[in-house]
Image (cartoon, rainbow, N blue to C red):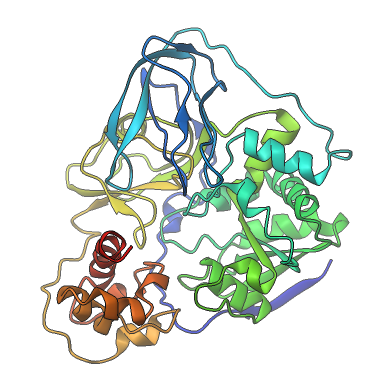
Length: 440
């Protein structure tokens, strides 16, 4: 097996305390099925899925309830057996109202599974078709439909399949636990993706703070010389696609281009596990693996929960809040979204729920920009955040567009490093939303 121990990285980035000790040693637990689930028909990048059920429909676990509607879209399956009570708007984890299917669960559960497929004999087209049928989306954050990601244009030659095992967001230990508890499934899921895109070698990129996962992988990969490991420096946002490609291959994805333009496809740990489950077990993507953590939750845990489970049910399963809880974030603290409605359901790509106390949150008074350049120093994409924010505040959106604000991945390194405590990434996120309405 080819191994790299050079501890590669990228220019820029920050080193926040990771707080992973709260959950890194805790195995996954299965949370009981809630009395009601709420399944958004848009929990992926692209066009919302088209509902196939209506009020009064009785559905089974694993049944298709919303189908792909367009090229970039994803199937959605019921995660429980129950009765559809309504299809109505509900706030999603990003704070946006989306059409959602409300299902009251029944006491007796009935499952619908797809036929298991032969791991050795399955063809690339069959793999991609099963991924599409199973509604698998990327679990690294963007939730891009995986069957689309694995179908690059014919003129794009893929040289590198990279498994993103960095999990660089503080607090979150979902991928870390999957690597430890389902090591073989990760490897075989990766092998299936290799076959789907016809590449002979794959690379696992993992940060050097994940010692137990690295040890498990090294042992498990002794019989898989086609899969190598690159040990990366622990730095945020090491797991961002462009940063990962730069660190591992030395290639830079040009502005306006995608990873396949430099011969790369990136997959997340949870995604390849979902691929394995869909093909070998016939299971659609109806479960979310997630970390519930922070000093504001009484019992931090790593959980397996049905998609559509409201946040409040998960929080109650973990013992509820401590007395001094101040904020609930879905996702990581750097790129996640603060929640104001605990009926909001988890989705396929929910990686964690972070509950913060006043002690964990830092409140600083915002001051004028010091023109120190610290935000520029740490920006992985070499942007000038303060200039972009000034343009957005003055509604000069065309100028901000010309300075490539659209490529900002909203990683939050600028805000984290700003001594003036200016919420730079929040301004940029707001500006991009306004630009999409005004300039498009």
